[in-house]
Image 1 (tube, rainbow, N blue to C red):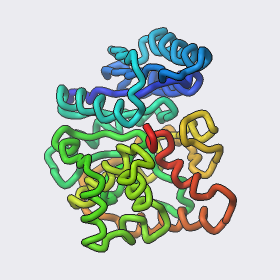
Image 2 (tube, helix red, strand yellow; image 1 turned 180 degrees about the horizontal axis):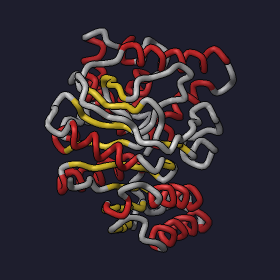
Image 3 (cartoon, rainbow, N blue to C red; image 1 turned 135 degrees about the vertical axis):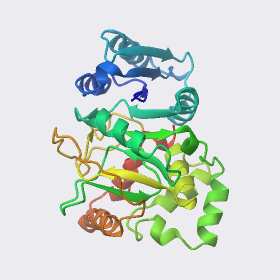
Image 4 (spheres, rainbow, N blue to C red; image 1 turned 45 degrees about the vertical axis):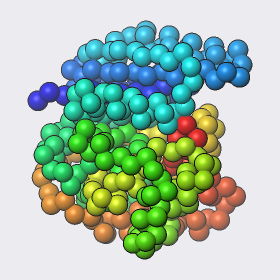
Length: 306
């Protein structure tokens, strides 16, 4: 098997970037993988402190051979995360046909790359599958070892060129189709998660989220993403360190350091799993703590405004 290249998007968080790279290096298959690190440039108004942090990230990225091969792509100007992700993923997936995507605050389980590569290989020819994701919420109920949900996701994920080509950048068109087909309830996980609001905000220019476009594009084309029953990704960015991130442990998971047992299955949405996830969202709402909506929107943390 020819393993998928890995992309890491980094910016100005040295400690988070180091944790992400150290966990990636421990992965099974890391030594056989190629890693592309995209480091965004400073904003025009960036302080000396911020510029120093970016320089520190550059130093960290180059200090070790984190994977079998490492290529660092540095931007002189600030593109923003949304533009960086869309251009970086497009460049690499067009070159290699498939790609695994991380951001600088995602700690991976040692079997993350194995799960990504095995499932990319398994569903490569199945056009109903657009992506594989490594993160799943800390659901108290038992989930299947793997399952499908309609749409796409954004915390440690992988895709193919044939699927990434389906990304629709016209949020207004996506929103119109959702409303015309009266799909908002299902799209929002039975009105427990503000996805439609995020898409409306994108249309109105209140955010610049690539991820809500990716989710809506896949969802409206009736495409599916494969999820593991336990998380292979831990997000360490919910600590006020990133743009549009907030301090919360509600999405904290325990990495189990065991491989996911995968087998080919019918590509259809697991309604039971979706309901369990919606119950998790609902349980957060029921706490009625200040900033609840911020915590939910933090699922798309820094990507909201690039």
